[in-house]
Length: 96
Length: 475
Ligand SMILES: Cc1cc2nc3c(=O)[nH]c(=O)nc-3n(C[C@H](O)[C@H](O)[C@H](O)COP(=O)(O)OP(=O)(O)OC[C@H]3O[C@@H](n4cnc5c(N)ncnc54)[C@H](O)[C@@H]3O)c2cc1C
Ligand code: FES
Image (cartoon, rainbow over all chains, first blue to last red; front, top):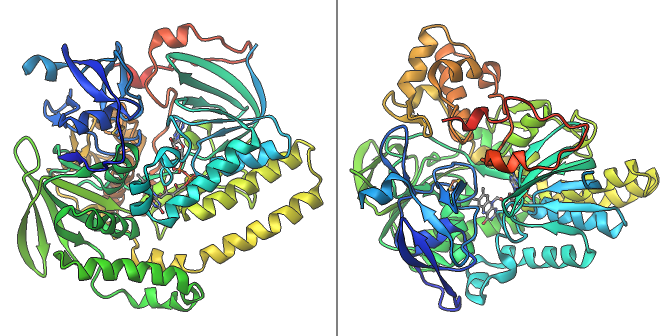
């Protein structure tokens, strides 16, 4: 859905664990933006509708990007990508 | 003992940056907190680390952020990024979470500069992955240099929708359609404001240029569009809309919605500030005096959070709050505050000339009776428009009552996404103004904070953490 077009941005990639799998994300951007950049557009399965959600506002108001980051439910659009983050998108990870 | 400041500023957008810098320049002990990791706010998000390519596409308006950030750093004001403010009280205490720790601090005055958000507008399929705010896409570009791939539809109304369209066109994005809900021919009312707007030809020409760029690109661009629907199974596949009386379908991988911006008022409501209703723009904003002081003596409102008037006005308003706070602290006398404020007030007036015209042109055409029964209203709790209508027919008259009866607004976003539309639906059913159906009560924490983090917090002796602190997180 999104691609990195700005060649002048030299992003350092760091290793994180996404739903139990090792993955690389660009350092220093929000986890939500980082996931978009590797094609992961689903942030979680809505606990109320059972349907997949994706981040909607990217500015901390919609809470559609809530996921477990380092053991805590956090807004992925507010947390920054750092080496070694453990990200779990709940039931989404298990299904895949 | 908790840390104490003369002034704590929440938000590091144009309003907060200017307020913080101005305070520090006068020797006031001030702290600026922002949940983002770099100063800039929404408009100047990550401006300090933007690549030359991003600076070029975003244009000179974005460059302004560099000057602001420079003044901010030079002033030496204390700043903490990645600081999520989750409680503010009228007596000047703030609780925030940073790097996994929460703490409570005190300010003799607090300036809240938390800005605006895109107006959430429930339409069929808006919860599908692939549908997001136009401003959200703008944020992804500033933050990570991301550009939409595949087919993109932009829908809604307002200058920021067209701004985003023109930016995407410059980047060569494949836009299948721009669907504007704004009428083809502006109302007579709009033209009433034209003479005032003409005093700012520079501003009008900028807008006209943008429109010309969009039109000359040959992109499909419709106005007066209605009945927009996002369609798809588990993600967006197409967008349907009523164009010139006919239903049309546009293939889309990404639908960017924008229906104007509204003040982000949760913090004001949490602190107990009195709120006012803006009938033309259909949003709530905190009641303030000419300096930005709310009815809570210690709390000021600056920038778009106090009423949407754009990034430049946000700067000036931030500085006005800072001057008044400094006067109250005894740093500057009345006459100095007044003489420093004069050019700011003039600048605000100059900036304001074209606004009524633009506001009237893109006035939100909101009518709660237009939302379809089977459209999701509350995304968190999956409550439909029809659920709310039914509750009204059963006697519910007010938004907080609605929350108890239907769970609408009870999820983690605390009604940020459904609140405005729920009020429109109830109001339309009762043939009243949304002003009459209330505002959702907001409780701490404003943002999710783990229980353990709060338990480990150093509390001020005087502070009283209420027993229902976690009401919104139990689920
Ligand atoms: C998504 C979006 C994109 C926009 N893009 C543009 C644009 O490209 N061009 C343009 O002219 N206008 C744009 N606008 C309008 C623009 O935001 C405003 O005119 C301007 O930014 C207002 O400045 P401000 O200082 O009042 O608030 P903002 O710039 O919005 O700054 C508010 C700050 O408060 C912080 N904050 C909010 N809540 C908390 C909390 N609980 N704890 C800690 N920090 C918090 C936010 O992180 C943010 O940095 C945009 C608006 C939105 C919503
Ligand atoms: S995307 Fe809306 S809160 Fe994170």
